[in-house]
Length: 124
Image (cartoon, rainbow, N blue to C red; front, side, top):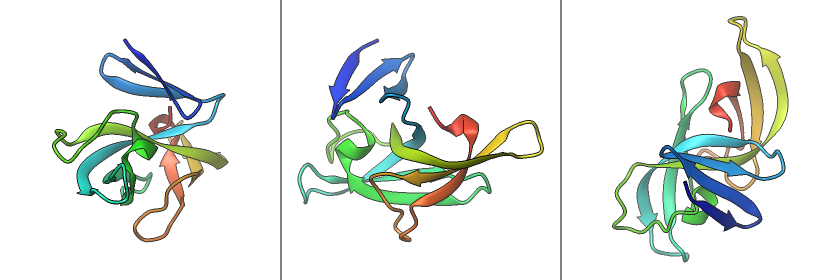
């Protein structure tokens, strides 16, 4: 298990899982699925996640926004990643779980959305 400091964030791999910690700030698990472009530096990647209703969202941003790994055009995709977010609200989903409305702090979806409803267990 290694530790990496990134923009004031502690990141570690535990059994292959990417875990980030930032004074209690939640992170939404996502999957980085492809390299988009070399510019602007350090390069753009596409990250995806599925919300509580099963809708898949795509976000495109600089690679370090989603992962501290040194991702390049030649990296093997998909790669586990995370999206820094803020919890806006939380409610019971009726099945004993929680639905959480989050706001992505650094990225927007390709549709321009930055608020999403996700299952609580999809956050780290």
